[in-house]
Image (cartoon, rainbow, N blue to C red; front, side, top):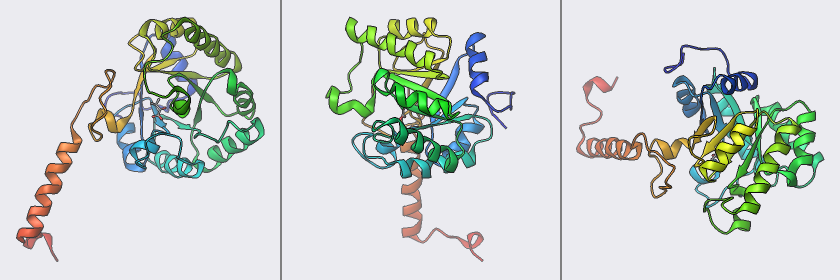
Length: 272
Ligand code: KIV
């Protein structure tokens, strides 16, 4: 049962489109395991992304590049078990769809068969359009991802705002149209100027979800661990922290350590 919405019907790609059409903003958060997937779902989030940001927040890597297809499958399968209402989208990790459309569709099918997720997300526009078409032709819904694409970080050299220059903005608009024409059901725009994101959202009929892309998109996505304050030392302007769970956990764990050391835990009621 959702905490923040009365509507307990499963979220589908079609319902996201209806939300855009009636001007209802779409909420999206990441999750990488069963427990977090359950909590995020129960709190009423519309879309849960098993993002390849798992590479950073779950595996401790500096970039999203090292996380593997099998690691993403393991996490996605766990999340799906905890979710009753939200649409579960899984990131295809770096290297799983860039090497040719046959391999891309094979990996996409493997992901869907094992995890039972609802949809996949791929980064890129024209460069990956053949793989996108092939996966869509297999009946697998795809969410696109343009703007800052962390899987291309070695090409950019930094995580600064993308598409500030006209040429890159024009390419982004043309890629967004291409992805919509190909049949993607939604698009993520990461870290681009708000005016550009609002323009793309108004031109496309499919929902556009932003992260660091301003308030003119059809919805917002954040990395769960960042917005609940489990990660520290990462404070981009777009990140709003809704809790400081790291402090809550430090306090709880510190008190537990004290209680074990002093012999206060367990007491008589806490034993058999
Ligand atoms: O991997 C991820 O968490 C993402 C979001 C930042 C959109 O792709």
